[in-house]
Length: 156
Image (cartoon, rainbow, N blue to C red; front, side, top):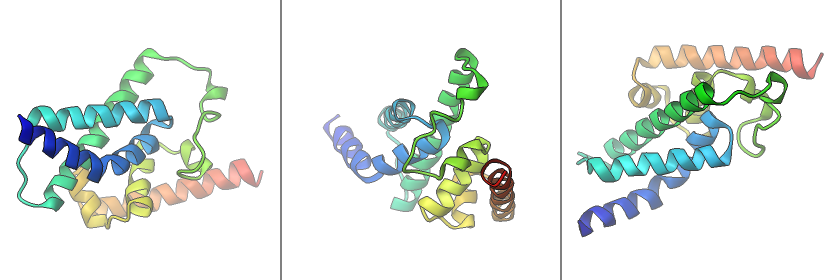
């Protein structure tokens, strides 16, 4: 059991900030992002997976973080109703530019992994499942949507 505790502490120190940023990019508020971090590392502790390499461990943690954040987002949307005009007012500052909070979760996630975390399209494809070509297309579409939002919301 002590080895499990040590592995968890090392993983939390190594990947905690990344998991938090992923949670923020998907969920949009610190409390929910912290819940995503907690759920991710709780899964890590309970499953106690073995990894063939550090890259494999990092990929597992990020995939788990994305899944936990999406689950929280789904649960929050299912049980919490907020007036539409308040939806984007709570977008945090300091992470992704505010206009990106208007994008769908899938778009924010790939942009977060590409431009904030520094992953390649191939690495994102491995993390999220799918092909590198599909990831590149999603990034292209997300950038186009962001540009459209910018023209509509900022320049209008």
